[in-house]
Image (cartoon, rainbow, N blue to C red; front, side, top):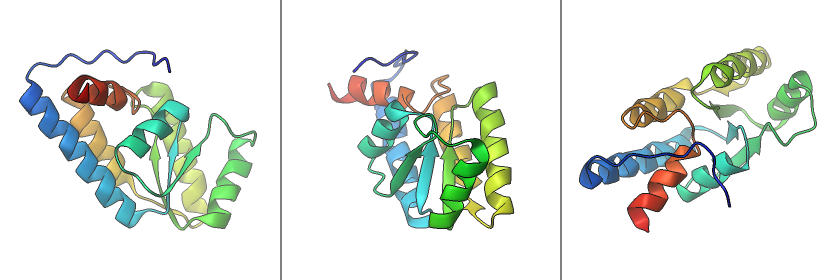
Length: 141
């Protein structure tokens, strides 16, 4: 599997290992509060699975629905979700748009987990969920 934009600079393996464990803890806690996660693509999905997320993971890049129909589909099945798009301008824009659409439909969007994960990624200068996978590979290879 090829991962793009996954440069992870380990400064202190002990610190990075702890941050990875913190990410696992965030994902575990997230699983207690949400019914599903929305991610951009398959690499993000694989990353969440490796972090131990056991709930449904919806990839918006793979769906053939427009944004309105995608939000309807989520609202029909889930009461609460977390949206883990990339932490770049495009990801933030889509996160805001989808959050608004879901909240209009009565779906609770748990934003605190997105924020907690971002804080941990900022420690590495990373902006994508899939970059956590590169960190994991470096720590556990």
